[in-house]
Image 1 (cartoon, rainbow, N blue to C red):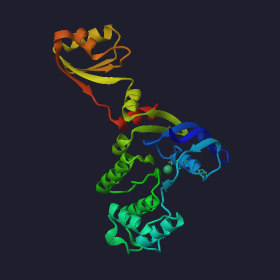
Image 2 (tube, rainbow, N blue to C red):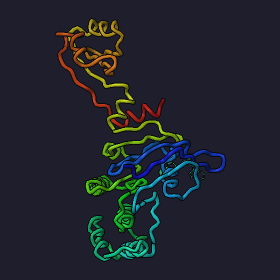
Image 3 (cartoon, protein in one colour):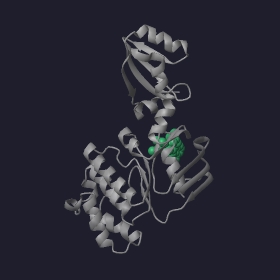
Length: 286
Ligand SMILES: Nc1ncnc2c1ncn2[C@@H]1O[C@H](COP(=O)(O)OP(=O)(O)O)[C@@H](O)[C@H]1O
Ligand SMILES: [Mg+2]
């Protein structure tokens, strides 16, 4: 089942098309990363999902409760952390609000700062407070727009621990981020640019797609000969010193066949791991 189903979504600001004919799904129980450079249309897509901007196309949401954390969370600066949480709890009509608020204060490690005015919180604390406010009504769908922007590495890690534990409980998460280590943690990625989808799939799918296969590094005894052999069978290879880089795309060649071609000359063989960052750069550069 899909939590969110988007069909032919187009969002215009005057003549400018911010999102163009977008089709995507967020499956129930997944962490979906909506990624792409600044201006790609991620926030606009989220705003359309939430009905905050006029759009053409169809957006279907199958969630009971949505937790939304926008890029600049609308917290009440002149209220304390706890008052903000109480405000959101009341607005959502949360039962057992007191208990839920205590749980969340603990979760985001703001118990000691409950009486501090939000305006006096550090950036990371504000993010934590915003996250707690977005969670107070126990949403089954979380829509998080750069929740970890400007957050230090330790806190980013603990944020992701919350996300993953919530996801294990069955909650669906749609998240945007510019951090590659976070993108790696998404079960699926939708990569956007210029209001369109450039690629989608698991992080591994995206890497394979960007590279058109995998790079195998082979150290060989008679490098020049080996290189010529590979070229003569039409393979995409590069030679540096005695090391060959061969693009193994399963349609053309598989690792066992590489063994056959190069035979006993192989000294060492290693499959290179493409980073997600490189994959994005390749896809975006094209
Ligand atoms: N209210 C608006 N009016 C005009 N243009 C907008 C508005 N909101 C966003 N845009 C433009 O739409 C494009 C996509 O923006 P946005 O969805 O915020 O991108 P992202 O979140 O991927 O960085 C950008 O070029 C941005 O300047
Ligand atoms: Mg944005």
